[in-house]
Image 1 (tube, one colour):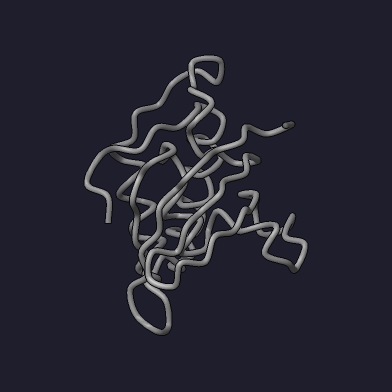
Image 2 (cartoon, rainbow, N blue to C red; image 1 turned 90 degrees about the vertical axis):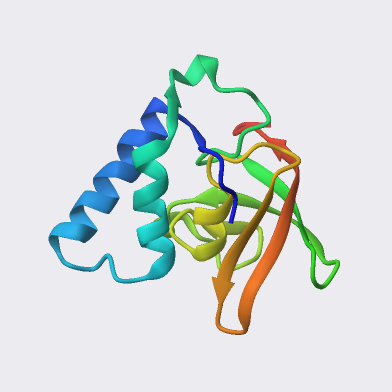
Length: 131
């Protein structure tokens, strides 16, 4: 797990904070990765969208990610669950991988829990939304 604060644009921060608050009110904030998101939001550096560097993973951006353990490299776009297309081309911001990479910069190493154990990834490149 990365010990540094994540960097979020204000719109992403507001959306994610709203989702976490709703899940908490419904007592659905049981999953470890969603509690991690809640913790990361509480310490995130939040900036205006125009001040967010282009190499930060944001909702709608794409990232090339290296699975450190398997050597697999893939590119995925971070979206809300309703926007998933059923392929690896999109990843939910509320999934363990999505929570691990949101707000991280290119070059960051992250980890997340999976059914088979902890998985380690490197965010190799970030492509802002619309590119």
